[in-house]
Length: 483
Ligand SMILES: *[C@@H]1O[C@H](CO)[C@@H](O)[C@H](O)[C@H]1NC(C)=O
Ligand SMILES: *[C@@H]1O[C@H](CO)[C@@H](O)[C@H](O)[C@H]1NC(C)=O
Ligand SMILES: *[C@@H]1O[C@H](CO)[C@@H](O)[C@H](O)[C@H]1NC(C)=O
Ligand SMILES: *[C@@H]1O[C@H](CO)[C@@H](O)[C@H](O)[C@H]1NC(C)=O
Ligand SMILES: *[C@@H]1O[C@H](CO)[C@@H](O)[C@H](O)[C@H]1NC(C)=O
Ligand SMILES: *[C@@H]1O[C@H](CO)[C@@H](O)[C@H](O)[C@H]1NC(C)=O
Image: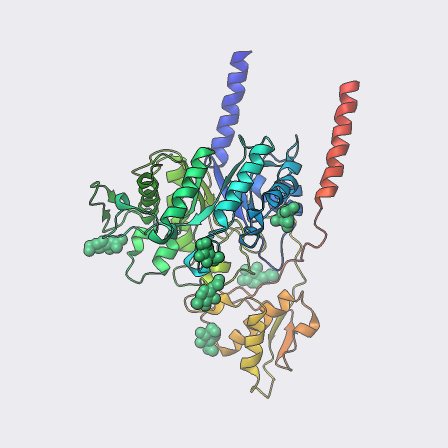
């Protein structure tokens, strides 16, 4: 008996090892105007062997699609609800509605509640400094009171800017939390520790490169930097900024007395468009350096071993704010339509494998909107392009991006088409004061893809529907037991 079980365990283990780096998760954001149905996305997660997912809310249709899959989920409370969670009764209600409710056999396997999303970013001007810790406390306390505290932990996904960034003058072993929030960070870490909850950090080598013209390019990747960073405190040489960044956090935690606190990387990834360094080749180089290290449980110099990591991101989101940069809408390892962008081996074995794309994607008809070459009055062209881009996504037109080499007419067509597709190919959306016309000819050229949008998923299966089907299967089970 024992032997047989042991054998089964090995079969399972081999299957798990075969598909994915152990513990690998992905971020599933939904800020897109045309979304794939949640069921399609859950199928993609399963087809690619991904067993953990991090959400940015606790949307019913998403949760319904995840129910019964066994995929481990991090649900989230958006920043704009943090202040409300300062009221314990309100936090309790959130936990009832969005956690306890799914906590049954065949429900959703919730492991974490993310309290806010990078709430201490300097660009928020301190708006969430006073509300995050009370929200964290109330949510974990409500989880504890509901008897779920052992298996479900509240955590705050923080940007790596909560500690000083590693550099030649401020090396990892000298890591400290930002001085303006050191006291607050200490209290947060104390509370996390008391509840055996992990620290969650988002680490972005791409942004280190993007934000600093002098940043050594190779150092953003994992295949060796010509000038490694020497940690003057420990003598350790850092060959990539991910390790240096992670270890700066380890040191910051140590400095406030919690050097052994578990750390979870909530977001890490590389975008494929919208900047000169954002392209599929660099993303490939980044992931195919990162994943084998994770698979080998290499860890970092100060924390060798397993790291729980969530890739950012699963899919592109064309509705994200581009305040941080045009690349913001291009973080997906899959495009807007669920098709893989480049080879990536999630098992970390460095094989040149394509991911499994979305099945049965419903596209709009093969129609595009283009600049009308017969248009006479061009005086309003710039205004119309501007309008089209304001209400759609022209981030691929910018410097260093996939559509940057179009001519003036191509530019106009690109903008008009993006707007036309957002508007579900409504004929009225391809006029632009007579400057535009519809075509059935694919206008894509070179690296520039003139997209056809997917049909929006309007009839997303509700949780109620899943619940009904769950009741049905429970009834079947009971019948089976009675017979
Ligand atoms: C549950 O989560 C959803 C989605 O994030 C949110 O809109 C809703 O307000 C939450 N429910 C409660 C009772 O707070
Ligand atoms: C933060 O302050 C800057 C400058 O005062 C302002 O432009 C920006 O809109 C503010 N951001 C937020 C989120 O309040
Ligand atoms: C946070 O609380 C401090 C101290 O009570 C107060 O001075 C500050 O104005 C508050 N900040 C915000 C953004 O509410
Ligand atoms: C550290 O200094 C060396 C030598 O000046 C330089 O080549 C390297 O790019 C610097 N590293 C970082 C991360 O700034
Ligand atoms: C096309 O648009 C991009 C982005 O707006 C701009 O940088 C480029 O100069 C334009 N090209 C032409 C030929 O107008
Ligand atoms: C249009 O052409 C491009 C480049 O050949 C191709 O990748 C894309 O799939 C085509 N689009 C459609 C909707 O057929």
